[in-house]
Figure (cartoon, rainbow, N blue to C red):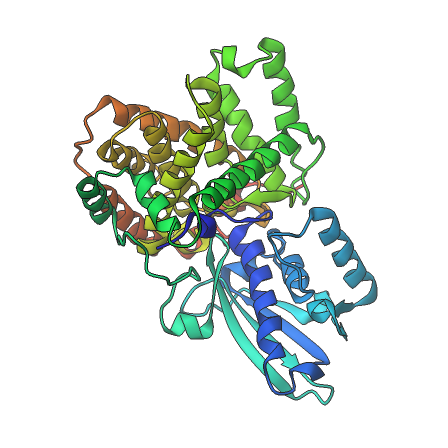
Length: 458
Ligand code: SF4
């Protein structure tokens, strides 16, 4: 069972699969290397990126992430300014402190190779690390896969077909799909959030869980606040201007207090875009379930806090637990990787998670929550991933705004019904997975199709 704290992870933007995952993989390789015979004698390293990681890695900061991981930095704790200074030092000296210790020669322009024509069978987001001694003899070599949402598996785990690196302790409530989850929750007289809470309680106290969930929301909220304030251009050749601060000003002129505003969807657009502009600039973001889709949940939580009478911190915890339960179903039975199934696996999944979670905090039954989550995905089926210029900006930033508004409509629609509906959440998850498998590779985070090839870069 996937914990909420596995799904919601703090890291640096712009991508959980192309930034956080590679950073974690590099860090894991440093730990692996230290245990190998001769692991202390490394004189040279090279890193090869394959498939989607190679094709969009430059725009997604994959090379930076590799350098930071090799330098021993953890995505959860690294601040953007420190990241910049480490990268600047490596670029100036062509040397890095492996694991934060022994310095080795490393020229990122030569020693990180983008091999976009090669794809490894387990997952398109593959990378190989090779370490050599001073004589040029290979000390160790390891392949890692970044399978979406910041999750990483190595070649051994991939051989066992393990698609996540979540803890394997037995949960109190085991469920493989939405059908089992609903049946078990109804038998036990629990809400979906309570099922998740009881599972989380196998690992830590209820107080610690609440503290952790409050921290997750705190990070999401801080990211949104930064996005509302920071003006200027986003990094990259597209020269996309940050829109959130200007939009914020306009909305505040119309009505300084969002709670009094009739234009709720304008505020939801703003909150989602603020998060994703922050993500696009390499800021600190919470995966929900990915970085590219990180704006949907915070925007819908802010909708709940601003527009729903009686909204409180306990409701935010319920929201996050419910969303994590739904996200875990996608992770287990389909994919949350744009490189594997297109954007339906990122913004589509975020929309489904947020829809179900909003239905929960608006008082929906488990059946209505499941219905909302199903609607949230049904109308995102087939959504491609075609980031322009390999950057997580167009269409990603606006797409989060639409995902958030669609989630709100999905929850409202489900709450008008009694939970009975024609297509189950399990069926839509299966359909999303199959659609993703059938999708042409050029629409799966390669920037070789769609908008990515129809916009002229200036
Ligand atoms: S188009 Fe969607 S899946 Fe692709 S990078 Fe953007 S947000 Fe992620």
